[in-house]
View 1 (cartoon, rainbow, N blue to C red):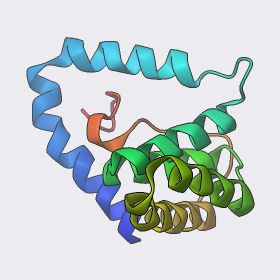
View 2: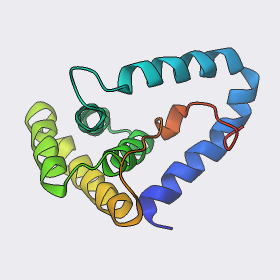
View 3: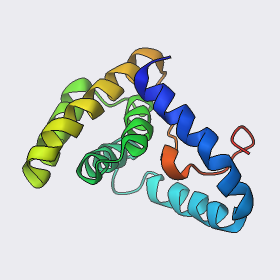
Length: 133
């Protein structure tokens, strides 16, 4: 298991107890997550790239792992991710030069291990599912 996948797994494990304490909140988040990432005027892949760039600007390693995975599963290319990281660097400056490469590495890790067309919720606040409950 790579570093990004391990970070994602750790966040899921840590979140289980809180998820059990506030299941309604997690269910509402899962509904929001599904509604937002559903393809519309923007494809799910473009939405994952946007989320990945935002995760870099928020310096959220769990979100980076989740949306790098989502970008890989949606069929994003390394060039697309690299350009999205360029936008994150433009908007966030120095910190994005640290978190952008982390996101790019996480994407490459997941892309190497993932078939396209599936997304996952942010690992920090993962949507409830039978596997995560």
